[in-house]
Length: 454
Ligand code: SF4
Image (cartoon, rainbow, N blue to C red; front, side, top):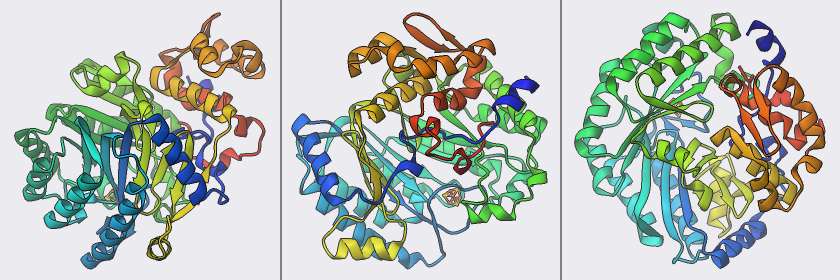
């Protein structure tokens, strides 16, 4: 395993999109967005909505999200006013017979909003779009600041799934990442969610944080298993201090070594699977009864900017708020990062798109393949051939050649009709995906922009 680490531990994308964000350009704008909406209207593609609520009171040093750190609570007033403008602008152009099958609020901290603000935002969205009866409606909550009153209001408004950041229970790790969150707070939050009848409770853990050890993280995992969340996302910490300023305060010497990280990850897989969680994709776990496990079985699991998700493969994703990314009929659009710019575009009656990617047929083919690999760890060549009108072995001659070293290392098996990632290979699935990334292959994209794969 040590040799594998040396060979494969290098910067690489997580493939929550393909082409990855460094390939997106600023010449993609409003006209492209409306054209994509129009195509989706024509096809009557269902909708998945995302709302970005960026505010947090304090900055966790590991955080890779797009946030606005402030204790000035009044910031939510203009933000919500502009979100409403954006919702109206877009909803006016969307065929309202397209059902919303998924709505997610992420952040930042969505529960930075007051209960009244939560109510008015949810009612605004519900008044402009038509939700299917079984729509998945989820909100990210921070156990440190979320109240029972907020949870109760969300449940009444139709929220049926909750996701919360746990990260690590160890006090020394929590102190190092500026996120003090006692175990009792998480236990309380899970209990409230259960009593209120939320269908699925997801928790996030992060490995690779300062002062984590194989033993300390095993303790965190066992404490979390005792709380029985329905899903667990086990993220590999992306140490990118050149991109995230708050990470510059971290001493790299306090981070676990790549070998320890791999051990932490392997041990966690063992613990969760021993506790009857299904290992999903590259870093998620779900109880067999959870929708995510069922999505894995019926191959409807998808990958988006939040990680793994159900249903999204059949939907156009329309997103609202700063930095929010829409994925509509194959094309990507990302909103502006700076609040004032986002506000001024909407005030002048325009969308606040900063950049995006209009995808070619080759992009869509490679996206399909990479997402299949990340979701199902298995590619049927004949499915790809049929969906994209290609002859697989001819189209990917060079890629198949480059897969040979993964085959030799026991990470991938290739047969006449399939490419299968082995159990061992799942730990290095980002590296396998990189083989099919045209932009990395052409060296047009520098892998240095990404976090390390292990
Ligand atoms: S991890 Fe969550 S709570 Fe912490 S800064 Fe990032 S978005 Fe805010």
